[in-house]
Length: 254
Image (cartoon, rainbow, N blue to C red):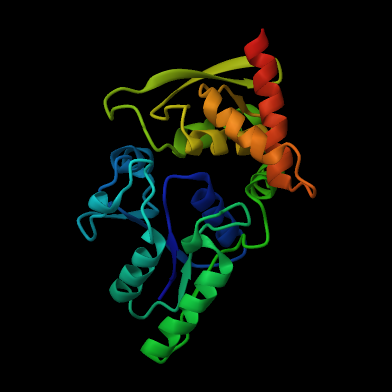
């Protein structure tokens, strides 16, 4: 049985697939339609990729979704569902990294869950991520370095084949947004609102490889600036965030 990778439309799972394939892993990419407020936009983003299996109507979590789009224990539930559906699968991959702060997407929790499932089923079952020891900005820089593509080609790939947003535009209504590479402005169409935390975090990652998007929610900008500006020990995540905010402020002052 092939190894399983939980696939969303986000950057993390996109890079996880690229990394695992580059390391010789034979993986199946699985996406679950869980009925959340952004599921339609995620599916529309990935549905043309034949390497991703989209499962409809297996689990509906829309009634568990909070107003801020958070779904508690989502990854736990999807791990259990996957292990039941693919019972002979001993390896399940997720896209977690050191940047993640939710409890169901970190190494310690998944290590304990691996032990629990192994005991229950009396065989070795491992849930892991290739990026536990890395920040998201490290991962995207790895992706950028291994490509021979020009920056605008990478931008086109990542902006059009990934999606991260808690409050997306209607499925029939993409909006035109701007992004910059150096001083050159380009346009693209997206479902992403460019005002929520998911859009902000994705923009920080893209900015670390010189793909700069505007962001339109001052409250969220101020929240992250306050959190990261005066850390005693800066991290790649905090440095990338502050650098992005600095460039945002320069843009908005023009």
